[in-house]
Length: 417
Ligand SMILES: NC(=O)C1=CN([C@@H]2O[C@H](COP(=O)(O)OP(=O)(O)OC[C@H]3O[C@@H](n4cnc5c(N)ncnc54)[C@H](OP(=O)(O)O)[C@@H]3O)[C@@H](O)[C@H]2O)C=CC1
Ligand SMILES: O=C1OC[C@@H](O)[C@H](O)[C@H]1O
Image (cartoon, rainbow, N blue to C red; front, top):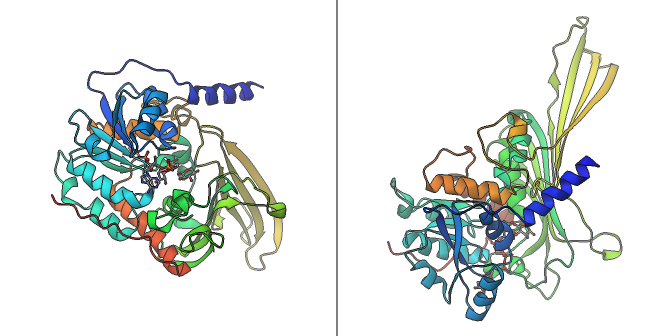
């Protein structure tokens, strides 16, 4: 009962966060696009951040921008994205445009000297990622901060999950993420190739990041990728779902399984929680046993709801122990040890220096670190640098190549510095 009350309280506070007074030197954000995700990803997290102000929004349609600004208490509206970038009172830009527009608008924002919090996936493909993240505009001690907004990795639960994993000894990892059929229309930005849509770009980005973090390195190759294309009559260059397998340098295999329209019995919409399961190789356990016997353990760690853990999550740790004859491998004894963890703050991990409340979402944790980076403060240490984003794009590209689908198209935009 106490735990149900905690869940309700935590979830209510996500939507009705405390609103401390704003600092005089708060970072003033402008939003490019009156996007669906901004309220969850930045507008609400900003409310509880004393050093963040959502100062302006720009949309292609001024009436839409006005209505959005009114709904979300945003004081200033611009009728074009460029006008917002040209405003010297804006320090940072949040870009939640279709993936295919990320490259162009990030470069334009950086050129205007703004810090950029860029929605995932950063850009359309690895070639764009290399140009963007290694750009001259990002060099030098006072260069603007650019972050691909992989919010999930900033949450203490994800960091705690990673701490339970012995990367070199991971044998298999499975990461799945899906949304029920009907959640997105077939012409949604996620389903249009020219806007760099596709399941691997959208949900897939999280699962790819999960594998990269679990194995702690980049895959050698994508060994299989089976897409399910959009239904007939819709964009046939876009995967509505994909299942891909990657081989990592330690010989381990990682699988991603993503679906933008999950269905179950009789084609009805189906639901499935985001999940990551990691199985380690068998390890020897030191034990006082007769010389001909050995004790081995296989550790499996499963994280349920790794993408939005603040709402609810659970990390299960299962250790399968076996005592057997070394030579014949005949089983002598076996047992299983199970435990579970929930990690809603750093403090529960014995880390009292890192700030964070139970109601802080992944986005709120990320915002904290983004501001720390701008203010040149040390922060929690969790970050995603440009090379990381380049590798991320390359892994997605490798899956499209394996599937025989074209890489998402590069932007025609050229930046003049
Ligand atoms: N971090 C997360 O949890 C999530 C991240 N995302 C990412 O955020 C980005 C935006 O997603 P989401 O908010 O769902 O998207 P929306 O469908 O809300 O679109 C975002 C904005 O894109 C603008 N836009 C510009 N050009 C076009 C065009 N040709 N067609 C359609 N829209 C256009 C629109 O701006 P305008 O208002 O000017 O018309 C719109 O408001 C994506 O990169 C996505 O991957 C999405 C969901 C969750
Ligand atoms: O980033 C995302 O997270 C939530 C999903 O619903 C969405 O498709 C995706 O863009």
